[in-house]
Length: 349
Image (tube, rainbow, N blue to C red):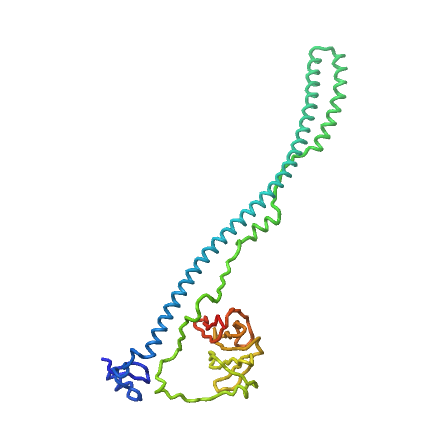
C-alpha cells in the first residue's frame, strides 16, 4: 500500500520501497502531507489548464485535417478535370491532323484512280481495234478471194505494227500503284517515350491557422518544489567577452552533440558554444534581430526574428540560412517536437 511520497524522485512509494530504494533520499514525507492542499494548488490548476488547452488544440488540429481532406478531394477533382480537358485537347488536335492528312490522301487517291482509269479506257479502245481486225481477217479468209485477203492483210499489218509499238510503250510505262503509310517520327517518339501523363507533388506547409495562444507549454522535466530545490551555478558565458558584442540573449537550445546555440539579439547572429562555454563559431549577420532558436532536426535549427515577422531555417554545420518563411505576425519564443515547431505569436502590437 502506498503510504509515502518521495519529493526527490517525485513519486509515491510504499513502506518497503522507502526502506530499500529511498533510504538515502532527503525529502520523503507521508502521502497525506504531500497531498495536503492539492485541490487549491497551482500545480493542479496548471494541469487542468494544460489538459483543456491540449483538448482544444487537438480539436483544432482535427478540424484543420478534415478541412485538409476536403481541400485534397477538391484538388483531386480539379486534376481529374484538367486531365479530361487535356485528353480532349489531344483528341481535337489529332482530329485536325487526321482531317488534314485524309484530305491529302483523298487528293492523291483520286489522282491515281483517274490516271489508272484513263489508261484502262485507252487500252480497252485499242483492244477493240485489234478485235475488229481479227474478226475482219476471219471473215475475209472464209468469204473473200486470195487477192482480197492479201490486200486486206497488208492494211491490217500496218495497223497491227502501230498497235504493237504503242503496246510496247504502254508496257514500258506500266507500273502497279500501292499505298504505304508510316507514322510521323514525332508521333512515334510520343508513343514510345510517353510513360506517364504527369506527376503528383505533395508539399507540406506550416499551418498558421491554429491559434498559437492556445498552445500549452510543456517542459520535459519533472515538476519540482522550488523551495526544496537548490540550483547550482556550473558555469557562465560572457557574450561580450566571447563574441565581441554587448547584447541580450532571450533564448537558446542544446544541439544533439551537446553544444549550445545562442541567438545574439542585437548582434543579429548566432553563436555556437561547447559544453565548457568555449565559443566554437558564429554565424554571419542575419537580416534582423534574432529572438529565439530551436532544433528542428539534427542538421537544421529554426530562428525567430520577431520584428521582421519571419523565421529562418538555419543549416547547423554551416550556420547559414537555408530559407526564410514569412509568418505575417510577431513571433517570439519557439520550441520543437517530432520535426515540427511551435511559436508564440502576437497579432496586435
